[in-house]
Amino acid sequence: MVTGYCVRCKAKQEIKNPQNIVMKNGRKAVQGVCPKCGTKIFKIGG
Image (cartoon, rainbow, N blue to C red; front, side, top):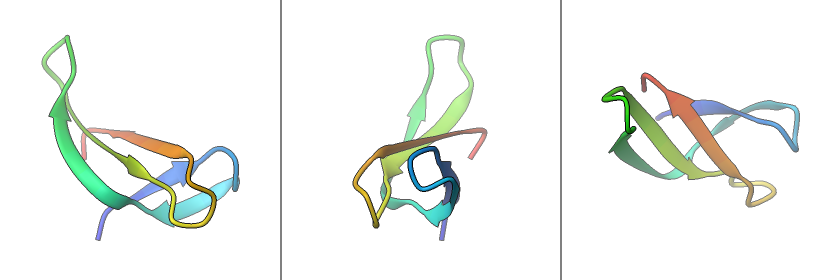
């Protein structure tokens, strides 16, 4: 279970369909979707 902050819901939400990615600067991150509103959630260092 990976959680991140949804800016539209203004609350921490569990990330739906999390994908581990590597940013241009080499840092790891997790990208997914908010299960309530469908907005992208992005968490650095996840």
